[in-house]
Length: 241
Ligand code: DC
Image 1 (spheres, rainbow, N blue to C red):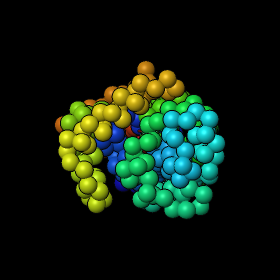
Image 2: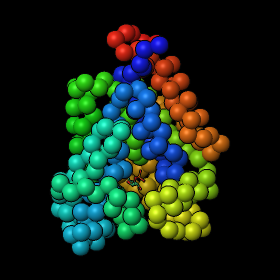
Image 3: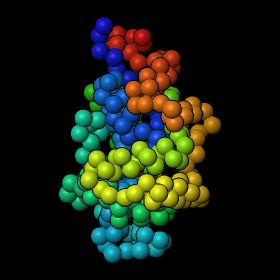
């Protein structure tokens, strides 16, 4: 069997702890596609705000602080994140950024700036050697790429998401007990779903996939099946499977 390739955009949205990042990266690797982690861009912008000593809620100072240059790579094997040329991949996962990112990403000017950049990145990947890209975030199917031929909204119970987030934090050497992780996950859900500009919600034509009872291979199988059914998976050098 020849190698399979993705053609077009797969939009993967949902709250944190649904396994989105893991499956988005693996799907992109399996299907020789690009990968875009839009959450990493909001996190790097938030780091710029914190480093500038700006209050994340300040509607005037935040849009100025996020003019710092945020760059993200699209190779699923090594997704790099840079702020003004500095590798910030580790720092953006720390507690200070995680606590402030919902407030920073609620500002319409911040969203407009990053959505424009995300659309440019997607277009440049599709114009390059890769013909497909997996884009993960909160508003990909609704705002960034509403024309994507496959939109999937991942969900899972808050308890399961907090457990996954806690495991991820422990693997990365970050502390935090289960109860406080659950509170933090629920708080971020509320902020992300309740904001006025592009709140977290499934697109009308998104497939909602509940991952509470699924492991990573199970989610990947479901995503690959959906992409194949939509005619987005082709054999390298050939037509649709
Ligand atoms: O996926 P993540 O946990 O790294 O995302 C961090 C935050 O960024 C999340 O709480 C909300 C925000 N975000 C957003 O508003 N829109 C996106 N497309 C991606 C992330």
